[in-house]
Amino acid sequence: MTDSALRVLFVTHGFPRFAGDAAGAFVLSLAHAVQAQGVAVHVLAPSAPGLAVRADISGVPVTRFRYAPRQWETLAYTGTMAEQVSGSLRGKVAMALLLWRGRGAVRRAIAEFKPHLVHAHWWFPSGLMAGGLGVPMVVTMHGSDVRLAKGGRARALFRRVSANAAAMCAVSGWLARAAQETLDGRVVGTAPMPANTTLFSPPTSVTRADDRVLFVGRLNAQKGLGDLLEAMALARQRWTLDVVGDGPDRAALTKRAAELGVAQRIVWLGHLPQAELAALYGRSAALVIPSTEEGLGLVGVEAALCETPVVAYASGGLPDVVADGATGWLVPVGDIAALAHAIDDVVDRPSRARAFGEAARRRALATFSPEAVGARYRAAYDAALRTT
Image 1 (cartoon, helix red, strand yellow):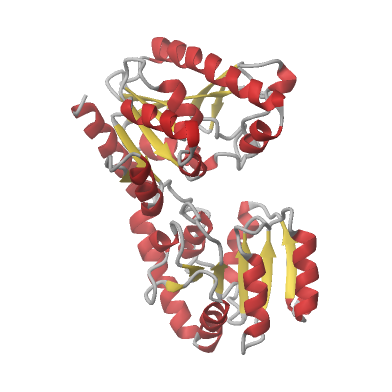
Image 2 (tube, rainbow, N blue to C red; image 1 turned 30 degrees about the horizontal axis):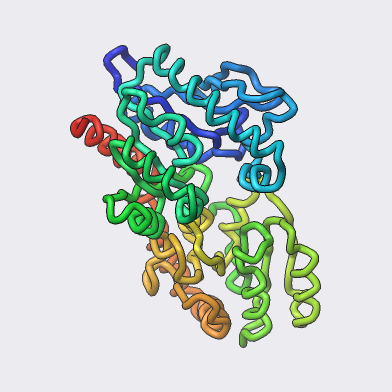
């Protein structure tokens, strides 16, 4: 980077603590993608126990700010911010401190880094901390923050962030439309996060099983594994299911599988490293995503990059990932019979499923590759600067 490069300050609570950490890895991948477009990136993120104030994560400089007593600095990096804030007084106090001290940290970072633009990931808390400080701001919404914006005082705060932003965008068309409704029609663009096209690629050393399907996700009601178990019992073909992930409904789901008589056809794998997951995509006939109101469905993108077609509910951001009848199957939410029929179709017609998978990879590369996403965000930055 030269001194004349466009300088962008990322403000986020989701970012890897170290190279290889999965927490907020998609924000790191975007940093790399825009770096390739001639952008100098510096990241500002909250502190947490054991983390240095300054670090370099895979070529991206990071500054972390203290906001509370050390034992209270647990809001970031764990994916439990909402639960902590809603579940305890300590969590609420920690959030208030995060917002207050975070705003001061943004001021200091602006003075030191002198960015042309601030890019806030999640309107809350980052957009609230970073807006109105004399530097144009772009806000990316990732899902949970759009749902938060719909009610009560949060709606007013969301509108304040929007008023201070040069541009607002979301990672899927569905999220963008939901945000626009909350903002009474303000234009919200769609700009996804980049996928790892190096790790997730077509299999070269494994054989794809035509009768084996895959589920990847948290074991809770929203991710819909219960519906998939019902479809498994209803299906005409006796396909096998690999389940990757864990969660609060694990015991109830294993019990339900036994009640439905499908337990012997399920392999429960728990959490897997990304490299093992990539290999599993490559061995599977299809990935099934029976979730509702999915912000985007990044696992669907990963599968597509491995030439694995996707069977999914037509819900949330999943239509951005799956082109029904061209790269996979979309079925109505809650239609167990349609879900079972679509998976049977995968098994009945493996050559068609593989053609869908090849088309899915081409589509995913055009939309979610680092090159495509980086160029889209660079254009968004340039447009935001022209309008301020």
